[in-house]
Length: 558
Image 1 (spheres, helix red, strand yellow):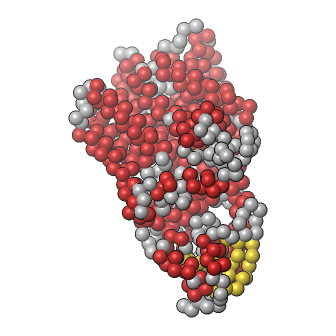
Image 2 (tube, rainbow, N blue to C red):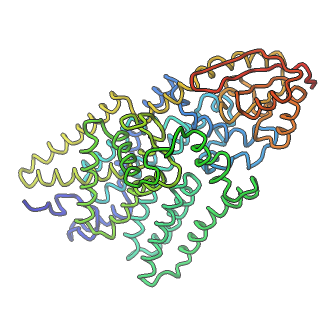
C-alpha cells in the first residue's frame, strides 16, 4: 500500500503543489487559514471557553489553586499597598502574568473573585486554539486539523486552567505562536525577505514574553534564536539587522531580571536561592531524602513527567496509545514532509527534556496519585506538551485517513469521522474520571478551606468596628483572607512593607489594632516575644495547617 500523495493529504506546502493548485497553496502557506476557518475556530473555542467559565465560576473553582490566588495578590499589591512600587512584583515568579492582570485586578471584586486572572487566561486560550489550527493547516486537511484542535481545545484540564489565574495557558499560547512563526519564517526565508524580517520581530517579541512568563521560556528562547542564527549563517545572512536587534532584546530580558533582583532584593540570583525559591521551599517541606522521586535520576524523572502528560491529556485506558500515536505521527510527518519546515514545530516537544532535567536536578517535584507518594503536585506541568500531542495526533489521523482512501475513497470520510468522535469521547472520559489538574486544585483548596470559611467573618467584624485600623499579618500564605474580608491591602502591614513591617514586629500591639498570626510565622514569633497589650479573640485550626490566632490590641492608637 503506497503512501498517499500530496493531493490526497492536502498539504499546504507550496513545494508539493501542482501547477494548477500552486498559487492557492502558496497563498495559504503565506497567509494562513481562510477567514471563514478562522471565524469557525475562534467561535467554537469561545463556546467551549464560555461553558468552562460558567461551570468554574458556578462551582467557585476558579480560585482553587493557592498559586492562582497568589498571582492575583502579587498583581494587586503593586498599587494597593502602603508602599506601591514595581518590586511588589516579587522575586520568584516572573512578572509578565502579573503585569497582564494589573489593569483588571484594580477592580476589587475582580481581584476577590478571580476574574482579573481569568481574563488573560481566556484570551491566551483562544489565541492558542487559533494558532494551533493555523499551524496544523500548513500540512493537514481541515478534518485532520480539526481533530488536532478538538483534542487540544476540549481538554478538560486546559479548559479548567483557562478559568484561573495560573500561568500555563499563557505560556502554552506563547509556545504555539513561537513554533508557528518559526515555521512561517523558514518558509518565507527564500522568496519573501520582507515577511521574513517581520516574522523575526514577532518571534523575538513572543520569546521575550515567554522569558518573562516561565523559566522554560529561557531555554526555548536560547534554542530557537540559536537555530535561526545557524540558518541565517549558512545562507550568508547573519548580518541581518532585525536578527541582531532581536538577539539584543532576548539577551536583555534575563539580564533585566537579574538586575531587578539585585536592586530590589540585594542578590541577582535571589529568585533561585532566596527564601521563596523552589529549592528552599522543597527543603522545608521534604519529609525524607531524596526529597522527591526522580531526584538525580533523569530516567525516573522522565517517566514521572510522561505519566502526568498522559493523565492530563487522555483517559486512563488510552494514555499510552495516545502518547505513542502522537509520537509516531510527529515522526512520520517529519520524515515525509520537508524536514526544514516541520523541524521547527518540534519545538513543541521541548517540555519533555526540560521537565526531565528539572525534576532530576532543579528542585521541581512532580507527584501524581498512581505512583508513590500517591499525591498531587505540579501535575499541570504536563499541559505544556498538549500542543505537541495535538499536532502529532493530527499527523497520525492524516496517515490513517490517507491509507483508508487508498483502500476505498469513501472510507476516508468515515475514518476521519470516527477519529474525531474518539477524540471527543476521550475528552468526555477525562471529564468523567475527574481531570487531574482540577483534582490537584481541589486538594489545594481543601487544605485552605477551613480558614477561608472561619477567619474572614471574625476579621471582617473586627475591622468594621475599627474603620481604617491597620492589620498586622503575613499576606503571602493566605492572601484570600484579605480579599474575603473586604479591606484593601494597604490597610495591612505585611512582609512586603519592608522597614515598616520590621518595626511592627518589634512592637505588634503599638503598631496595629488587629494582629493575625499563624504558628511559626514571623508575626507569631513577634507576638510571643512581645505579647503585652494583645488579647486573643479567636483561635483556628485546620488539618495539616499551622494553627492561626487573631489578636486585638489594647495599646494601638491611630
